[in-house]
Length: 162
Image 1 (cartoon, rainbow, N blue to C red):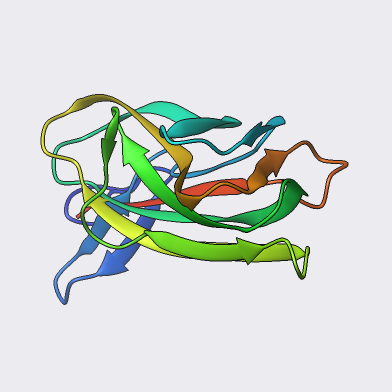
Image 2 (image 1 turned 180 degrees about the vertical axis):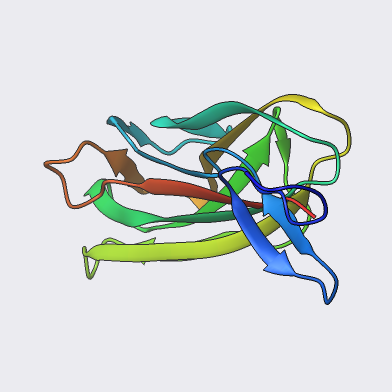
């Protein structure tokens, strides 16, 4: 509505001193919950349901926020569990990585959470997901779950469009 330089359409704006400048379009707050769990092993596994595919513009800044709970499943000893965000199959290099140690002498639920940032290099479709791996030890540890389990994981993406 309105005429230049004051014309606006639905979206998010900030005042740049001269005009209202759009910094975000469309549904840029996306969130999913895991739908199942994994038992961590020596390969990166996607948490079932903890994946979002959408289209972004070059230069979009995506803040990736994820959280959940690791749970002792079975076995003796310990396990080191790494959890990290991935985009199009590659681990995100800026932030987001967590390592958790779990041992069988004090079986417990261990929460994890982190934030990462990714700048979209070219306009197109991107898939963000959360993955987990056992990097040490032999203990079986469950990660992820559905909405009725304490181990459920949540992945939220917030996009800023400069």
